[in-house]
Image (cartoon, rainbow, N blue to C red; front, side):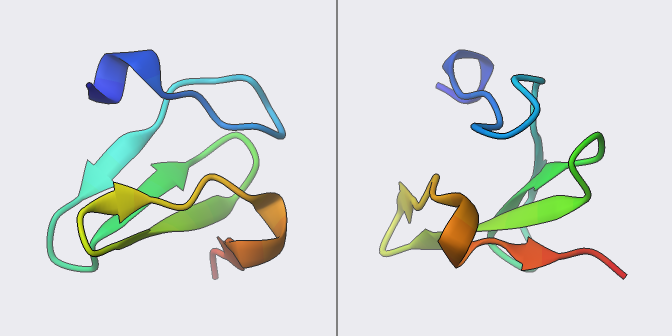
Length: 50
């Protein structure tokens, strides 16, 4: 399933962070949360990476 998901901002692939339950976009510098097993692919819901 991960291969089918792309960052809505940068249109690039994502990396899965199992520990934080997030999908990471290195290009956009954003982390999208996974809540109850469902990725929340909204830029407004993503956190900026440090």
